[in-house]
Image 1: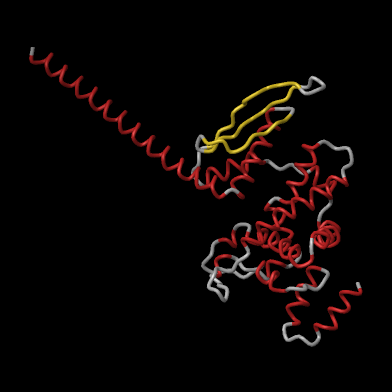
Image 2: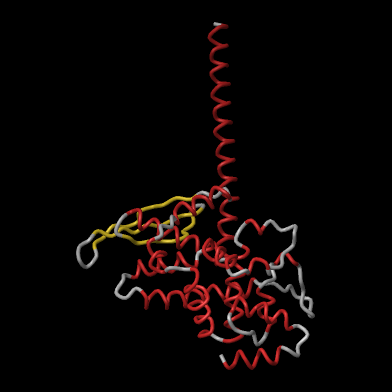
Length: 289
């Protein structure tokens, strides 16, 4: 509290004080290095560059914020739901940090009005604001550390916008989300049961692997096939989001598989044509005889 009062007095003499007060309304504290927060609001479509000519946007801060947010929400969920299983904790955390939730939170705290992006970009129809929320967490971490990030999430976000108990009961269909993504991107997705075993209490356990364009994308374990598929799909979605090399690999596999399908279809058509021609020749020969 004292720190904020001191910062507030200092800001009265700054030309850019309006920006500091704008962030204060969202954060509940004044930034120390405002450049981190300003960069968190720059979508890559703006084509802004630094003094050295490098692209300046929020993608690196988004990457950092994603990791910090996972740790903070995991910490909070672990302490709130004492004694609950790992699978329950993982699913609850995922519901909070998923793109839809973060996008909604960004709008509720007014972050959407501050994000800068090119009007040519179609990203305003996706999760640009949720990405900016993650970048904001990254900015807070670089500016004031982990504890301040946690304080922001607990006092400004969870206290006002998220009911942990209600959120934990919310159903999120990761399998459907993955299938929707695959249809949109014209990718082949399949789920395979790779193992069935028993836990220490002799309850049946199912282990599922999800393949995208025949490449392993994620595995999941559960007490039903459905639960194992959900967990595998959740892992696959996270891999798609965070692993650039994997995205390149499945795009390459998609092209290769498409070429194989085209070649196979062409060979089958050629075989059919040859068989029909042969039948026609046989028919003509029979008529001549």
